[in-house]
Image (cartoon, rainbow, N blue to C red; front, side):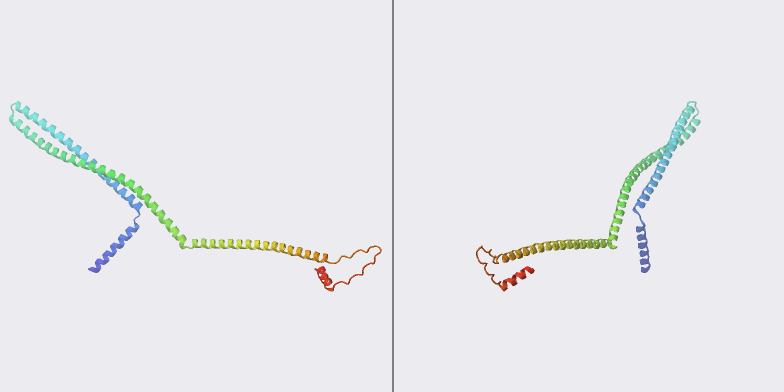
Length: 253
């Protein structure tokens, strides 16, 4: 017996889970409003039927009252004519309509109470349906927003899971590396250009200094004196071998 109970409980749980998953809030709300509207139609029909029955009872009651009055007049007429037996028979008929009118009067009072209750229920149901329609529209909007949010979160999760964002990050890293290499090349090119200008400036300074030294050395050599008239030309002094060697080296530069 315990096993059967567990199986039955499991089956009910599975069925409830399937039903819960299959429930669409929008469809359930639409169906609920339709059911309430069907109840409203049935209640209106019930109210209309009760009112029709009340009208018929009123007609029967009025007719019974009229018949009662009519037999009352007939009894009085028979009695005025001295026919007591006929008057008595008329009073018996009158009593029948009197009892019928009394029964119909009680029925009418009961029907009036029932109809008033049905009308109140009808008004309440109409109010509930109006409120349910408003709430249905609001819940449908909330449900649609929740579905959209769920789809958005799913899309965001899917983007994160399928590596798309990782691909963007990798491409961004590559672009940063390319920019770094480009900047390094530009810096190296600028540095090389500056070094060339620096070398040119340094070379020009050395050349100028060398030229100045050459001029100084050449200017330090003795200048031959012109011979005056009547004087003997001095004999040329032999050149210094070291000076000559240095002059040749400078000339070869």
